[in-house]
Length: 158
Image (cartoon, rainbow, N blue to C red; front, side, top):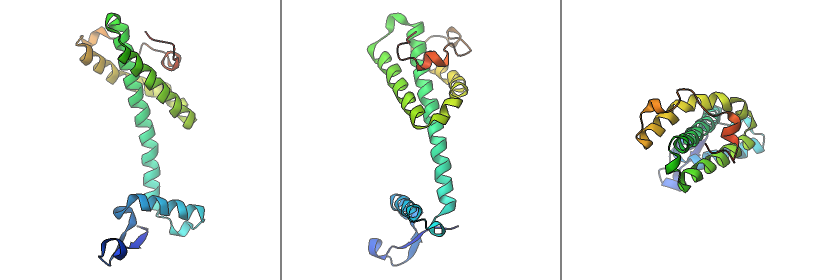
């Protein structure tokens, strides 16, 4: 392992070396950024840096999927219980759309995965909608009833 090491004597009084990554993640991030800016590639903690970058990519995909689940769950509730449609349901739909739009602006490559991610998110959205409405799950379509265009259309509410 290529850990960046610090003398923790000034911080903990211990006087022994320990990996910065494990002791102070924020300082480790700042050190990695400083090494990159200074082009001090030999000082990079490559193993942990690669792991953190991969984790960040996975986190973005998970966040997008979660937002799609929430948006579709509330959309299903609006569609199948129109008499109970509330400001909080509409706000949740709008909030998720804005967040999804922002994510796609920041990471346009996620747009290519949007349809597949929405399809993967739909079964959970369907289950959550059934649970929240206390309606049988068979009430809701087994396949995603919304197009990607509808999911992204800020004026679309079923």
